[in-house]
Length: 154
Image (cartoon, rainbow, N blue to C red; front, side, top):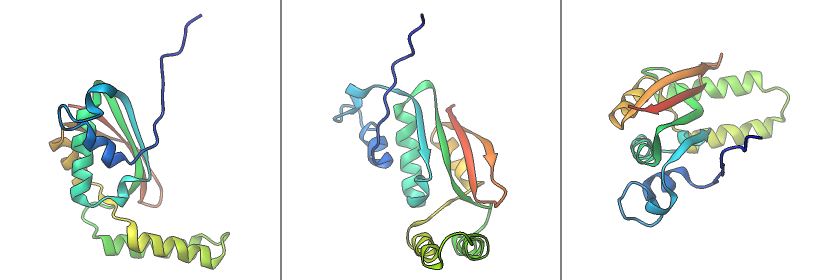
């Protein structure tokens, strides 16, 4: 019988985790070793563009040479400014999310307005490449927002 490979999941602030391993000799970097898979689901869009770059650079230093980063999130259309994205998403909520009470929809809109900073879908792949990643879109949602990308070390 073949035993499954060892696996462990960590729930942690991704930016802090990525940055703790990016400085040689810093606590945690030597003891945890490289990881095979980093998975982020609808979290990185809460980071500023500068923090996204820090995350991508730090995560690249933490992943094994044959590892990958799976990044499911919301992204802006290429060249779309944040305000246009927010207007488009708010309209989608108001017109399409009819199964939830209006006050719940408003909570989502308030969250989007305050905390969501989705990456430009074209610009982020250049940022990723500068940090040592090859970018591949695996899936793009019908609403031009949700998407899944696979990043592998260059």
